[in-house]
Length: 388
Ligand SMILES: Cc1cc2nc3c(=O)[nH]c(=O)nc-3n(C[C@H](O)[C@H](O)[C@H](O)COP(=O)(O)OP(=O)(O)OC[C@H]3O[C@@H](n4cnc5c(N)ncnc54)[C@H](O)[C@@H]3O)c2cc1C
Image (cartoon, rainbow, N blue to C red):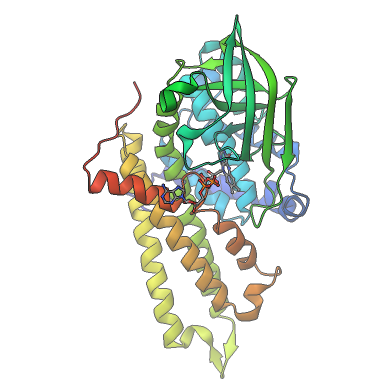
């Protein structure tokens, strides 16, 4: 336990979450990975246990706990080794629901946030489009005001929970000529006429339903606009700090898990008459990886602390995701190597971890885009401010 950040209450929460995951999730994971579908009952169970409400206000059924409960939630999800299952859970709780909580009005919170916390409604966040994801301001989906409705047209892609979710948090242009100042955010019911989605076949995250979604003259009530019209871009950017830290924490947790597994394996596997953890070349590699993972973890915890205190840590969260996902990919690559041929088989956890980890430097802002953002802050002294 790192007592600088985690209390005894945090650790009790971690233990009970571990128990829950072992009993309720682990027995089903291989099936969900194979079928690309996560059964509904588990969403309900997560809701009943309060896991979706960790960070949300009590008045909507949440627990209103500090960010280190979220850190524990993310870390433990990585340890069950299904990047897709973990993604489905955190995309719901920390991508879609963050917007409901921050920008939704009271009606939206009652209709969407409360049932999301209860695990009765599943959400997704739709920003990326087929014509380009990195260039968020270049999105083409439009929402045209028509009386007391908006009419949505366009398409989104790579949307986590994009097939099975009950509602969609959608970014669309309400004023295309204004560029990034013309983007707004809406909550849209899945059942609305004109929405269709197609599941994508992916390298990893196989339990998660990543989808391409089309909006064909989708009429939604004007009151489903979240926050102010035209403020969508700053809202998205503001929440990217949390999203990037989430992905940074996920990365250090899966790297730590891979390392722990590989060290255990090395203590059992024999070659040349001794266990392979006695070979200096491998010992030094493990020492280096352990140091890298530890540095990421400590950095991520310190950023979580600052974010929890209300600091706007967009630079540090971008650095967290950039470095943690890079280190996780490298560590998992080498841990797979430590298992020799067994690392390459589905009988052992490293193969899936290797596939799942590859998404880290791509989703939620690619490493190239993060370098671009960080270089603007570090070299050009650009200051990003939170949306007001
Ligand atoms: C499994 C999965 C789940 C996802 N879940 C979601 C989700 O829930 N919601 C959502 O909205 N999106 C989601 N995404 C989308 C993800 O965020 C995008 O894939 C990502 O932002 C990159 O966008 P793109 O794929 O369009 O790549 P592009 O923007 O087309 O980029 C292609 C390449 O060019 C590079 N590049 C682009 N611009 C620059 C530049 N200025 N300088 C240097 N290099 C550049 C990129 O780094 C990348 O290497 C998901 C993606 C995946 C694969």
